[in-house]
Image (cartoon, rainbow, N blue to C red):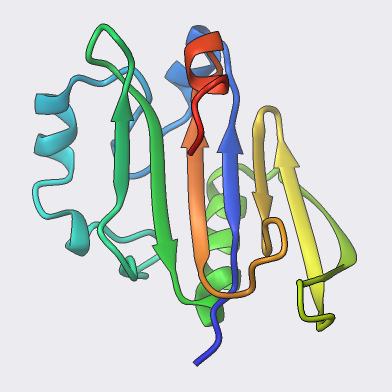
Length: 145
C-alpha cells in the first residue's frame, strides 16, 4: 500500500500557539499535560483517523511541547484536511503537482491558515502522511527533524 505525506506545519508566536489545538493538545504544554491528553499515543486520532506510527513529541529546554508529528495513511488525507477546515474555516488550499525521486508525479495540495500549513506531500516522499506541528524558535529551527 502506498502512503501519502501530509505535513501540517505551525510556526507561531507563543500568543498564536495558544489559539491552536488538536483535540486539546497545545504547543507549550508540559510532558504531564501531553500525557493527560494523549495517554496512549497510538489511539490519539484526528478526524477519527488513527496514527500509522507512534506520534513524535519534542520539548524545548524548559520542558514545553514545541514539536508534534503524527503520521497516517494517504487515503486519510482528505479526512484530516476536512477536520482542520471545519475547525478553521478560513483554511485556503492550492493545487499543484509534485514529483518523487523515481519520477512519479502526484497531485499536491497545500493549505494554509495563519501559520498552519498542510501539505499532502512533503519533499519527495509519497510513503507516509504526517501532521507536523511546531513552534518556531531558533532552537527548533536549527534542529534536524
